[in-house]
Length: 164
Image (cartoon, rainbow, N blue to C red; front, side, top):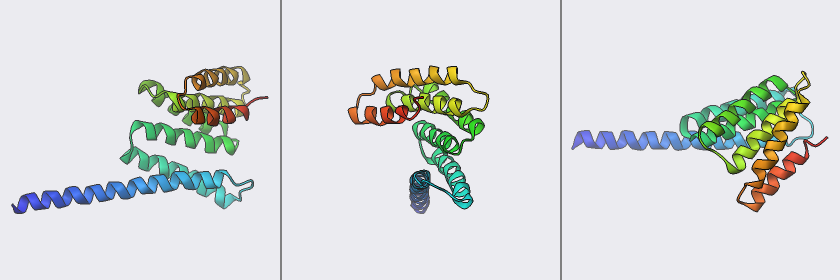
C-alpha cells in the first residue's frame, strides 16, 4: 500500500509540474504578442521578445503537442520578421511548414505556415520575391480551405499586409 501511495504522489507531482510549465508556455506566448504589438521597442524589449519567444517554444516542446510546436515555430518566425531578420525568420518558417506537412496539420495553421514562408522570403536580403509570391499564393489557397470564417478573416488580414 505504501508503494502505491508514493507512485500516486509522484504522478500528481508530475502533473502539477506539467501544468505549471504549460501555463508558463502560454504566458510567454502571450507576452511575446504584447511586445510585438508595440509600435516602438527599445533594445531591452527586443532582447526580451527574442528570449521569451524561444522560451515559449521550448516549454511547448516539453508539454505540448506537435501543433503547439508548429505554432511556436511560427511565432518565432514572426518575431524575426518583425525585426527584419530574414535568416532566422526563414529558418523557423521552414520548421513551421515542415511540422505542418509531416504531421497532417492543415486549416488555419497550414495557411499561417505558408504566410510565414512568404513573409520571411519577402524580407530576405537575397531578394527572393518570386518565391515569396509562390508561398503567398499557397497561403491564399490554404485560406480558402479554412472551415471557420473568423479564422479565415484573420489569415486574410495578415496576408493583406504582404501585398505590394
